[in-house]
Image 1: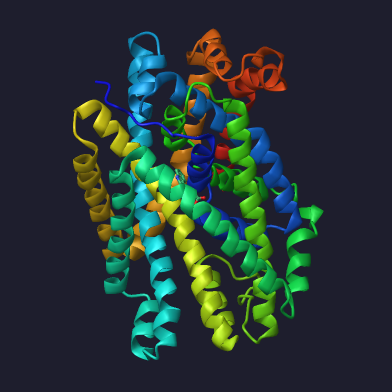
Image 2 (image 1 turned 90 degrees about the vertical axis):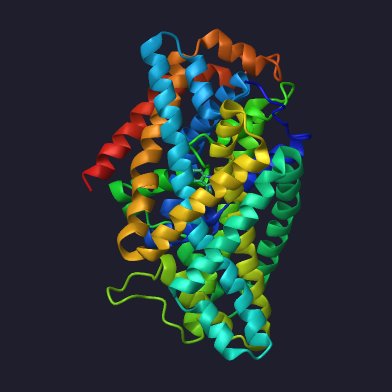
Length: 450
Ligand code: TRP
């Protein structure tokens, strides 16, 4: 059934929505910490190469399939396939994508909930509510459940309002706000003592590490997660793009924005770590490696803000607001995946579908919170480490082998009549057919061998 599907009303709206999906905890948290623990500038360099050579082509595959089929991932992959076997495979890959998107959302909401509670903490501390501020920052089941639920409700609320009034409106408001906060924070931190040492650590490449398989695996995983690939997020956003838009250009802008925000986040996080060290906060663990992951965000940086007095309260508030915004524009894109499928194939209205699915995913988040030790990392690895690369390969196969080349050409031509003369058309079709799936597969196998 074709419903009134909704459409991005402007190019700016699409770019903000797709960049909003891409820019998330992966950029502000994952990228800087990955860079810190993988040889600084060497990782940055490898990331730039992989993002443009592997992630961008895969992003284009999703955007093209989405806009061509005007449908959710299941319907889309099925409808570009010929023959019963391929159609079945398309259906399977589509469902797999929807399930993985939902599971990613289930753990993402938990982490985003922490961001919300850390945003409130400086408010509580400023108001002199010491025990509230401690409760907000201490890892506890009640706090986790409450803030996961609060964040999930925000996500549900935006998605139930639809493509224009929900996704586009909020992304267009929140993404510029995110950029402003990020730039202000960078300026502030760069003027603090110790910041230059952090910059050096970030930008000077340790080339001896660039050949390490671990560096490449991390960079590719980071690029795929950061561009929200494989699970149909970009596919469904692509399906809301007007036919008159130039897809290769839009995809390139989204990739560039994503990379730029990750780069900027590095300019904030790494200098902040070394400022923290100057202020007496330890930033290395027992083995001498830089602290990363949760310790960095939830202990090192808050400890740094504590040393800054009253200014620290404002900085902490701004920083965690930034993290919360980045999370929300990403989480809505994950929820859109199962919601679009349900609306389009089960004849349910958007509001009802969003609430049912959103609450079901919140239920999964609650199960993870209640069994945190055993489930959290399991779900993270199952989805991002194992499923996303496999789905990425599947999407390249659909765009490179299953979909007719002339159909792709027709699709892209609608917004770019001279496409045949472009570098994009000379390179991309061959690339997405042979190079992308092979390289993703090789990296995946390498990562399994550990
Ligand atoms: N890209 C987002 C980030 O960097 C997260 C994200 C949104 C995502 N949608 C996704 C990741 C789909 C994987 C799949 O935080």
